[in-house]
Length: 275
Length: 312
Image (cartoon, rainbow over all chains, first blue to last red; front, side, top):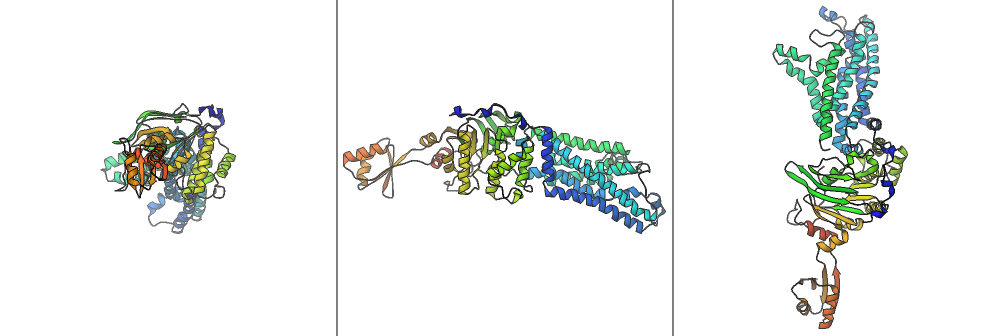
């Protein structure tokens, strides 16, 4: 073997080519923006939030006042203008799952993990990039939705404003809720490594679990329900929290804990499993 | 330099790689040969830290791959199936990988030109032909200008021009003193590309030798003789260590060299119409050596070379 021709460039890697967390973040940002499907999904989420903020308040204003006086008393102008958030969570949840399972489905994950063999920086970078992008896009979207919705409701003088207690928190909270839904989806996607399985698990937790819990005896369901991911997470979007739910910030904290737990499980699995 | 020591991988109750030890040295192209399911792709994934060995260890340039701070500069890898997101353009695929290591955009443009993907670099990789996908894989391997290359079936799906291009590239890399470890099911291609061979069957090491030695040791070299007196020749050459077979009027003789036969025929006054050494091809040597270790026999005929598909 002609080891004598081994060139001296083998000696030390150029320090400029080290993998760093910041570089992996830049890489994940490139991955996110360079797929048409992610751009369209995010766009769809924004269209849902802003579009329904015009549609739902317009319908409500047109039929005002409702027949039942109780509906007048419990009317929540903030919630009406944020109706699109509940549709947008589908797009953002699916996108969170896809951001990682898309790599497993195509085999890209092997190229990714060969470039970042320590692996965990990839999960942290994906989480950070996706959470930041979601928050940066949804905050202006919910602010716009609120503003458009209230201007439509003002035709019947039933609008509210940021000056009212709890309103600003609920509007910004809607963006925070959507962001955590996306992160939870990403963590479940990383854990399950399969698009269909990840999406099913995410929406099973968010939408099906509460239905199942409601079939339990009410002494049980009342105690459990407020700690479920969706109930806890949506507490922050309510201007006047119901007595049965957690307080807004505690609810968001509980929802975040679900996402963190899923991320920790995903990190352990990513470290341990074969790619 | 790649060093595997007692490398073992078990999937459930199936032993994919069984106590494999070998060294891949710089300066030559080392071929990694074995029939379908022999554990080649699994071994390559273990080298890259993608799969964890059940037992044993493997290092690249003295360290486990995972411990290298600049992995893309250390090893360039072309992985089996296309490890590319189908929705992303070739350029953005390479850019995202380059960015993990701070490799500049100019280098991305450079490798795209080197592999000849300049015109399609902005198109979605999902629409690429197999050959274009392989070129993108090679571009990925070249990104960090590494010292070690691990290529799983690089010529798969390439046209003859592409195959020659890969062969020249591998020779160039090896002659620059780099370590080149390349798997292929195309044994005739390996004969032209590799200087050294590591042959595996059912996860076990079968041979670790030069291409010439592998052919010489694994096959009996035959001599083909045509003569006007077949029976006389048969009688003349018969001996304890000599086997003679007759195919369409010519004798296939094992155990004697052309020189010996020529001299014997001249002394006996027999006319030789043809006297030629029939060297076994690498393919025949390979089939000989791995005959017992082919995991998935094709029904009755086993003459087809096993194609490495591996676990996706």
